[in-house]
Amino acid sequence: MKTFITPFKVGLLLVIALLAFAYMFGTMSSSVFRDGQGYRVYALLDDATGLSPQSRVMMAGISVGEVEAIALEGQRARVTVRLRRDIELREGIEERTADGQTVWLNGAVLSKKSASLLGDYYLELSPGIDGRVLVDGDRIRNVSMPLSVDDLLVQMNTLAASLQRISGDVEQITGEMRNVFGDPETTSNLLEIIEHVNGMTASLNRITNDNQDSLRTIFRNVEQVSEDVRAFTGRSARSVESILEDVSVVTTELRHIMGASSADVQQGIGTMTGTMASLQLALDNLNYSLANVQEITDRMVDGEGTIGRLLTDDTIAMQTERVVTSAADLIEPIARMQTWIELRSEYGLGERSFKNYVQLSLRPNPNRFYILELVDDPRGSTETTLRTTVSTDPERPGIVYEEVTETRNRFKVSVLLGQRWALARNNQFYLGGRFGIIESSGGIGANAWAFNDALELRMDLFDFGQARRGRLRTYGLLSGRGFFPERSLLSNLFLQGGVDDVLNAGSRNFFVGAGIQFNDRDLRSIVMVAPTPSF
Image (cartoon, rainbow, N blue to C red; front, side, top):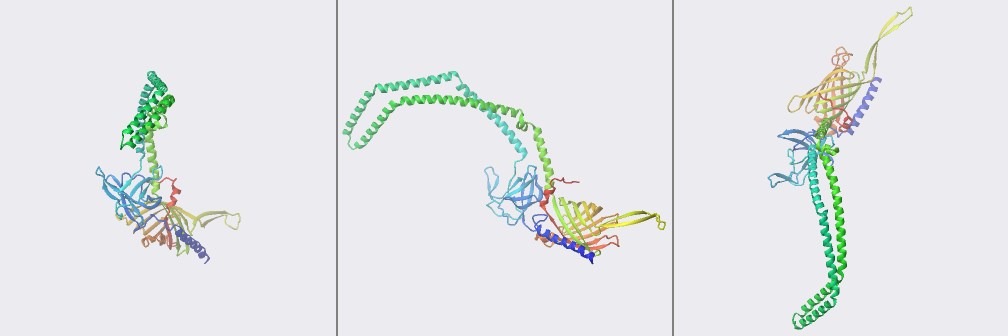
């Protein structure tokens, strides 16, 4: 009875741990959606590089779906995405442009975004505001593609050529301005004009001062004439009076201007001279700056410096492209990798003990997997040694040979590589194989899957050294995803049952058990530094 209680406690503890894991990771599965959840739409992309099945579809920084399939349609990539039911997309309003092209205004937009500089991409979705609501199977008309490295290099080359042309034009304009303002004859002509203006201003000042009495007489005569005109006016008297008053004001201001304008003109001439000097200084500085720009541009065109080599040396561009391509080739398989965790416990009816498993499965694609498993086997590890005892007792044999068999309870490890193949076009049935180390000994295995992986049959053959015929274990797993596809927690649970050590009747044992398996995408960061094996 004691030998049963201890393993029962261990098994009960493992079941509690399984339930805790099921509660914590209940929302995790191999995909964001189960069969029947969400709806599908598709878009046609000119370039699907960096995208793969289960790539993220984001809206406002929140994951709302994933890429389900990528296929070639004509010369473009048809990318099918599955979205949540609560995400409503609009087709947009169809209109034709002046050149005859069709556009969908205010419709949903699918944009390809770069997640890093190493070639990993995701899809950004904008729902749109006009048009009918998209349903399952519809197409997203508006697609936005990011700027590639090749396009950036072409634009940089075009920019360098434009800078060179602009520099040449500016240099030509500067030369012409230097010829105009730097010519001694032109400078002499400007100084002569300034002297003439000064002479005219002085003459006008003298005339005004010498004829002030005459101007006063003229103004009095004008006043007399205006009185006479007022006498002969009838109906327009008030208008004539207003006009004459305006003329009087104007003449007064004119007299004041004539008397005070001399100093203003002189000041204006001085200001003009200073402005010309400032203009000449500015032109000299501009010539110096343009000369520096020309020198820099010439060095860039000649391939000097980092930017010059980047613009003129095709080798650097090709090396950069190869580095980015190699990084993308490395990151893309890792981004597609799925990490599966499986925890299960089985109770042996013959041994009356629990056997526990913790399994980590890495899947670069749905049909290839690498398994690392830790096993707590109540059978333990059995070792047989030959002990030789030498005795000097005359009453006992001189040499005694003993065969000692020891069984130790310790963990066993399984490391397997596997592959599976579809047996039907509808992907309902698969057949696969495994080989490697099974429970710390060499072995091989076979698998069969049916009904969208709801039913799985497994067979392992290993431990050829401990048993004459080897240890053959066959069992089946019935997953909850076949009965509860819409319930994430129940769909991750499974029941199992089978026979262990089938070929050896003395140690044959029937067992039943249960477990949980889930796809924890958060564990991808742990394996980001590990290379992806390939066949």
